[in-house]
Image (cartoon, rainbow, N blue to C red):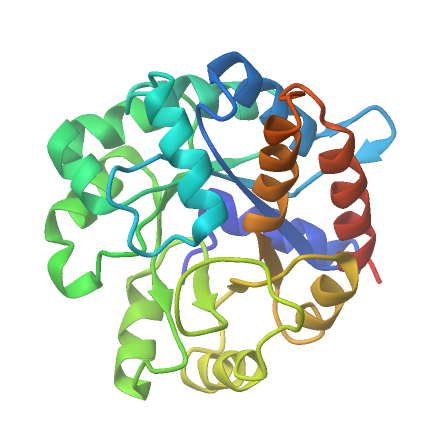
Length: 273
């Protein structure tokens, strides 16, 4: 597997003797200007390091794979006028900080925009690639062509239910890294990390030894991130970040990033243990 642009972020972390933090946040929440500020905060400020890689989510009207927190944030973003094209401005904001950015989206949005057009505009904004949770490599011929044409990473998912054959084929189709979903079901924070995650990553290591692996779904604090980083190359955190802003929004202070900053510092410390 080629490390691609996004995989280099994981490799740079390893060169520093630590693992990587991948942070997810949906564009347009709490609003478009607010999400730009959140994304810059996640990239780190001053002496406070941030995430090594940012996943920018595209809100979708039928988010069947998302948990309650991300669904709420995405619904509010859509109500407040976010559109597919807004993701490219968000990518550019992150790229301008020097932190690589990938987009995570349901495939229907890319298909509706136009696969080649989406790849073209993502690359022009400085994006590193695309995470496609509901697109399998067998059905991704258009995306293979567009990502090759525009030099973008392809990040596909595997889960504990994936067969060995599926894991090997998916790893081979990736450019950048492989997203391992640690639990079955929708996204959301959990009290404990999944016991299935170490076995899943071990299977990936055995079947595709050169593959960089990020583990997501359920990580909510630095202790959990540290445990994941004992066996994975990166800890992926989404719902925990979004929850901080949902809480602030519900409290009538949507611009309050204090909870987000505290959580970010805890997670940054966790992947560095």
